[in-house]
Image (cartoon, rainbow, N blue to C red; front, side, top):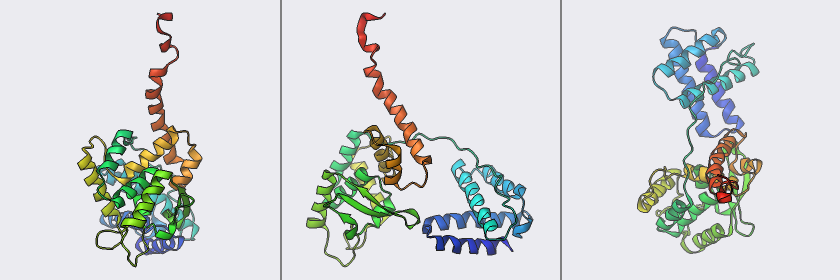
Length: 296
């Protein structure tokens, strides 16, 4: 079977599995670049004739072109998923990508908002809707796409929780505090327009607020607040939520469930971030240092 044909089958397979359109498109783009590379360099395009050397050559080609380490990592993970599918579906006897190593990338420091910056961001919001949007992102750490698709019926003000439709069509309940509850109640009952759409957040034209609109709103608030040194985005609020949740005594398994992560890999990065913060908070309170002149 030609690789282009199997790519189409893989796309249908992932759609039936309920993967998000974004993930399916991401896989498809990488694999089609692989097919173009194979034909351009006169490598086999019959799936059974490919070897791990061909896959490594494609990854190396991306590195030489200056692709970021994270993009090359994504390509490698896509290959492993695609060829595992090919073997499980009977198109290959062995998974040639099973021995493929995912390249290591540099570990970037996750930037988060300080408490003062969060207050400035909320103060810069010019409508009840924007305050409720920011408040919900700060208090729950949900993804911007999850927030954009929230419906009125997903909000339970009595119990202080929302039903979130996450990646892979996996539903989960996420709780929020009393301040967020008041912001949401005020928005729903005093500012949200009476329109046919059941989406929670509506724009000024009566249409559902999209992820792009939320991003732009945050940028405007960040600019008005004069916030610098950190990216004003919903994803930064997600990182900030995770960090503050752990520093306030939350456990990693609960955090994993709240954020909707399928593994603890990302949560471990938040733990490392908190370890740095704990060190900074500890130093002024070192018991030995605070003994004064008792020890010289």
